[in-house]
Image (cartoon, rainbow, N blue to C red):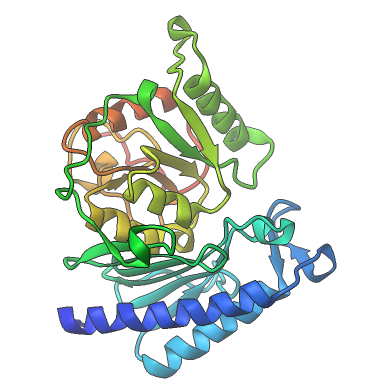
Length: 320
């Protein structure tokens, strides 16, 4: 199905309206431990508000665009559903549910339209900060915050002003997240990577990065990368609904999203790691820069080294 540029812009504007409606529900809610349930474990939770917000979003989107498929975090059934090439809404009603429950304002509504398994429209809205990121593939991205630029939308562009070069992990502010696995190989990989990023022991592989930042809100973190407020963000275990909308913002701002596992030497091919699928589960986002993106990706892949998470597609078979 072909969707025109003007239609995509209209969809973006509609998603902004829906995101703000969802935000009104979030900010008026009074979450507590009595109205939440656990999914995978006690770090992976859902509240009644998550479900109510997703219901609102699904109702609004399906009523206006009944021909598009819908994937939402709280209703997704991995045994029955996949993300196809058809136009698909990918929705996280509350990204940062644990923050929401604890009263931390790092909470976002994440709404994306994905076409041919590529982000086509993305809207990420923090209702507590009234902060908005939005993008349309091929038509740019913008950031709006009431305390910045007199509250007016600010274009996110790789050439205005030219972003500073990336000079490696030692000078980087790195976004991370522990995810919901707190034992086993995934947890071990996280600890090894985080320790290497933080360590000043260069002889032992330490990169002594400027800072590590964990907000437990992937969509917001990737948008911070797009805006140049983080130099990169890495997580293995995230889902498409965590990154799809922000990925559109990142790409339109001039940043890149690659595989969180080392992808080897070539550029562009899916097997190389430079062109991961939307549901890859392993992600490394790197900010816009006039130079140094590839070098930072390769340095980060070097930190991961031979370590591997259990998430995402298996590696390609060795060539014969």
